[in-house]
Length: 332
Image (tube, rainbow, N blue to C red):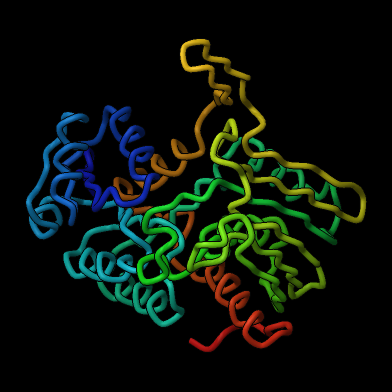
């Protein structure tokens, strides 16, 4: 078990990679072994700005690393995770874990057979508001959870996110997984049926959906509604939201993961934004991964967690195709 784990990042295709790198740069007890990127110009620019090595190939990175963070386009998650597993390197994979159930299961099995850890990047678990809400629910303050109303509404990210051959889907795949993961935690149950309505409303030119409404029933009868959309306008003061209202037998709690902010007005460019304060959820996520790499302790968010959340998004697409509810689990 390395006292000073060597961590690398594969690809800066996903914007979350920049946030994860900033956390790594703040950690004194690791070595950032470097960056590898299929887009060499992008990788070199990021590496030079951050003052970390750029490696010409993933193979060179994996030869030296104890753990890697994969932040490629969704469709390439499988390829990169399998390569890390073959090299015997622990890996944290950006969400969604994959774009098909078969790919996700193959990734999980490959990591298990190679004896490496596979963690799904679900930073919302580490948001202070959710941690407190989960503590209250686990302590029984709400009683049995009866219903959940959740939102994850953001801006249209553009780029490869709206290219189905690279993303595997639109806002349903992009945003459903975060909130379903939290729902699984607060209920302690698995989704049993999924019904969905999706459309392309805010950006009609897109090849993927930009809005979705999901109705989910869990194995214990809890019902949940989720608005997962790219409905925030380009000049909205923050990228989006992540909220949950959890209703129990004895009470309810409203959770807003990004409520901690200041209103920031910039006279120079006449902009208005929200400036977050408090500890970033990404900080807790990356620190947890590094801790598992160092200690060998199980990662707190597994590949199986990623698969179960992804399954709901895929079931939503199937629901639209069939025009009715879909029973889980889906065929592997």
